[in-house]
Image 1 (cartoon, rainbow, N blue to C red):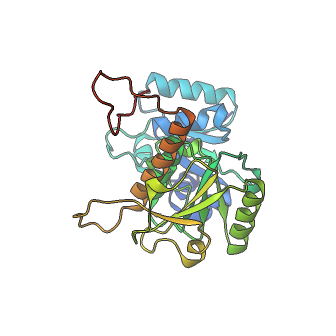
Image 2 (cartoon, rainbow, N blue to C red):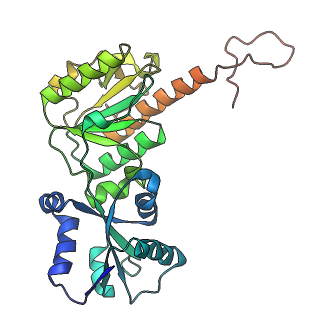
Length: 304
């Protein structure tokens, strides 16, 4: 085990600060910053298969049982530990309560994976997010993909950094559970869609639009499906728009002043509807066994 004591803003401290703030150097170093109990727990979970590069804590802060347990686990792996002064941990932490900074911060190895490594099947669903421009929205969509059983998130075009602290924090731990990949150009997108269609002939490529086309609930989302979500301000670019088999609209109240939903909200609604349809198909609604009156025109769904 390598213990590094940081008592001032020396080179080691500046390196850690760089991982947090500088996208280019973060990727060059191949590691990123993580804090928060849920995120750290998920990063350490062996089922999620992430590599922890280093651990940071202060010997001037009384640690909780949780923090001590994490440190004990980490020491067994015989890796790098940074022990910093309390005020330096304050500066590194993004926790809003600066009087009570994170007890532990970790750095995690960036995964280098190929899109062909994704393990999909005939009932899989994936989501493509094109040029995300807001870290919080990206984190929210990661969380929604995990919540509703999406098999993978694919990012296209130039957007905010997947490994930014704000993105990871907004995912509330789901970042470490959801497979994700990047497709950098149109040729890669076309090849990937073509490959999926070859393996799964019933694949649907579905995008969203605010122009009142097919209602979301009318689409059959129980087949293999690829959802396309566009940039927050510009929506789907024309290239992806033309690759959709179907464009769906999320119905809104007739008197609503809003013309569209935030991209994180829209993606969440779309993924929820796909999950709802799949649950209904897997567990058909049983006939309503109510009272002795005339049959109901629209009997209520039975709750499972």
